Structures are given as C-alpha cells and as structure tokens.
Length: 277
Image 1 (cartoon, rainbow, N blue to C red):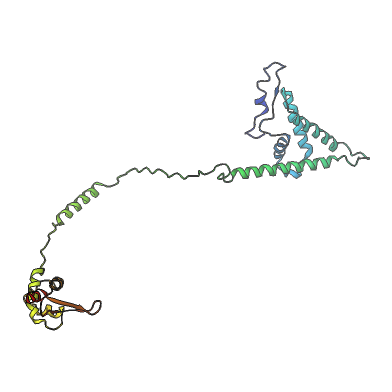
Image 2 (cartoon, rainbow, N blue to C red; image 1 turned 120 degrees about the horizontal axis):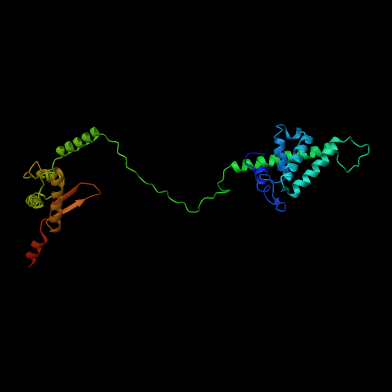
C-alpha cells in the first residue's frame, strides 16, 4: 500500500492484546473499495493495466485478505465478495477448459479482461479527479465577495540619506533663503481721470466737426509722455463718456470695433434752458 494509507499492522495492533470477542469491523484504510485495493496491487507490477497478470493479482489480493483476517480484523463484506470472485476467476484460469461451456457463463480469460478494463477505467477516473483538484479553485470552491474591499496601505518610512545628503540639502535651503528678495510694488504712472476731462473740455471748442479719439489723443500735448498708452486711452475714453453724459459732446461709432468719433454740442441743454427762461 502507499505511504498515506493505514496499514493492516497499525489497525490490528490493539486487536492482538484484546479479548477474542472484541473484533474490529473496519474498512481497509486508504481504500474506498476492493477495486481501489486491486488497483494499488496492480500498480506494484509496474505494467500496463491491460497487460497485468490477473492470476498474480488475484493471488496478491487473496493473500492480503487472508493476512488481514489472521490478524483478527473483520474485513468488510465487499472485500470478501471480491475475494471469492477472484478465487473463482483463479480457478477458471488454472483449471483446464471444460469441453462443454454454457453460453452465458464467462471464461477465465473473459473475466480477467473484464477486471482489467474496470481497473483501467477506475485509474482514469482517479486521474481525472486529481486533475480537477489541481485546477483553479476560484468560482468552484472559493467565491469572490460581492462588494470589493479596498486594501489597507500601511506606509513605513525608511530614510536612506547619508550625512553628506543632509548637509547638501541644508546648504540648498540656506542658499534659497539668501536669494529670495522682498516683493516691491513699483508705482505706475497713470493719467488721472480729472486731468483727462479737463483737457478734453479745453479742446471742446475746436471740435466743430467729428474727430476720432485717436486724433484727439494726439492733440493732447499736456500729458506726460511716460504715461503708458493704455492708461491714456482708458482715461480719455472715460472722460469722453462723462462729457457726453453732461451734454457737452456727442459720441459716434459706426460699427463694432470701429473708431469712436466725438464733436462738441453747439448749445448745451442747460444754457438753452437759461435762454428760454
């Protein structure tokens, strides 16, 4: 038998010291039935199952069962039934063939071939079981949970910096601090809105015809040339809107993004009201 089976000696160790009435009734350890025992005995011959000596196999099985019974172990009935069947097959193989054989009675060779086929089929089934057990167990034995569980990540900090690395990093931080300068806000020159309005009001008497704001900007000579052009343009435009609101000038733009034109109003609404009064 194989090393993982229970030997007959181990099963009968306690029986030898027990009383005669205390007889064990056990299955042969490691075997599921007499065919499994026959298969193990057949493998010991190290030949193809279809080419083994059935006579020798029957003798080994009968010797095994007889040895177990002499050690006061009560063998299961199916093992004894197999033993009687093998004894019958052995007699058929050893005795000369009778001249008259019944049609429904098998010969010894037929019985041996049938037994070899059953052993071969049992060996194939056991091999298939081993392959299934060695296969993947997912969705067969082990099933995944419906809700996935996020793994917990545990971080362990390991510092591998040397003294030289630490000194270099400290020096870099100090150099960075020395290079940093405080943020300074520089005053930017702008054209005040009040100055732009005063200048435009002074040029109003010259605007009898439509003139673009660009031309008007050129005529404004009292503006500091260092003032950015964007500031001048924004202030002049805002001043022109205020003068239009006050009724001193008119603004016109023919289309989107076209030049803006301005001209003075001959009579202001306030002056016309005073004249009527």
